[in-house]
Length: 495
RNA sequence: GUCUCCUUCGUCUAGUGGUUAGGACAACGGGUUUUCAUCCCGUCAACGCCAGUUCAAUUCUGGCAGGAGAUGCCA
Image (cartoon, rainbow, N blue to C red; front, side, top):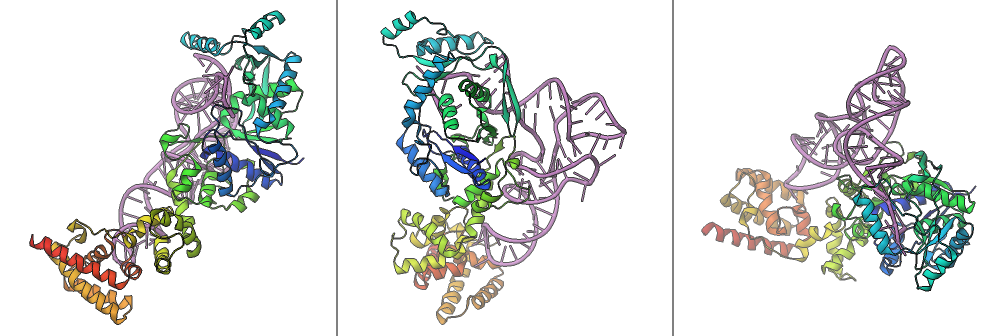
């Protein structure tokens, strides 16, 4: 039997890390078992739907490099794959259920239901859920209510006796007494759109889905779905409820923990490779020691057995580490194109870079690469080139164990050595030796000489190495900055 | 309240009826280094609790506790 799995998000917000991991697991499982990965858009909530969310879904999956075998845009023999376009199908099946006596019309107002719910919570009633008020309405009563213009919903008759079992690949059998299932959930809303329960069951059946891999938050409603399958006389798919992704505090990962949407991570300069690699590892492992997986590898080696039962905490630090590792694995050219939008956006370079800009970036990328955790870091690392912001704090020039006087002398004499040697075309190694010698002469640590020079030239205590910085900046500009800093320090000394 | 699921270092995890319980991130310390970073080395650190089975339990069974999720005309 060919494996057919689906990712079925609801376009009501940006693609969330948790959702994307579900997509990834489904996708990898499909690939690894030579099956089909189907995308289905569950846009039955017309209130929360947004076009932007749908666009975000497509752009996120394409950025991650996840292609669906069937679904919107690409089509397939079980379409349409957008639920709002399947409106009629759900209506027909819901009515069929009513005809079979397995569902019924309900005319209760949202107000009444709200009051009911409040009452149940207030009295801490053991019995929570709909009171089946409309279960046994006569034809006359129905006609009367409908005459008033009330649009009914269709509710499933949940059996009050017996129990229902969901077979879960991960969890084993999950059994629930039928009377513990929240009574008579709505299948078809008054606007004629189906709820998740109905649409999901019908589509998974009609689309020939073999394995349903979805978040564990669906476990409690699993038996309800099985009841629906039984009501239709269909065979339920194989279930596999995925552990959830949590925040540091153990609660469901959400906004207050930090970024949660792929779009944010993408904008912040995370690589798709890093995100895929890390996100997959929250809740799955191959052997406990292999850490790096490319998408292509996962398409081969992903196994259901490697999925864990317990929820996992999303560790931003570890993602960052992965990202840094992937950045360092890029060639300079690749990294250049990845980093370019950030520099253009900041106004540092033209979208069609000039020759000088290209020269600068060629020199900048190798030393910057070692220091980047995200692509965005390029802005900070290169700002000294594109924005000259001389330090206003003289302390910055003074390294540990030095003072203003010695630092000034180090800067003055260091610049002299540095620039005259550079102009003579001496190699950086020789110059470095001379500067080390100078430090000894001044009874300073080596950094006592290098720090004032670096600060003068890069405007920062934390910077790229001195010789790289000078080369990037150009000799003239570097010398200009050094002289300026000497003047600045002299002023301070005299003050 | 009721129902359901979960439980190995701070975090992601490996693993076994007898192991020095392994790896990675983080943290901390050290080395390389002109700062930062990279790189290298090291340290810290876990089987939730209580019973039972067993010669032996982190591993099997039961109970408890803790955590999470569900309980919507949201998915």
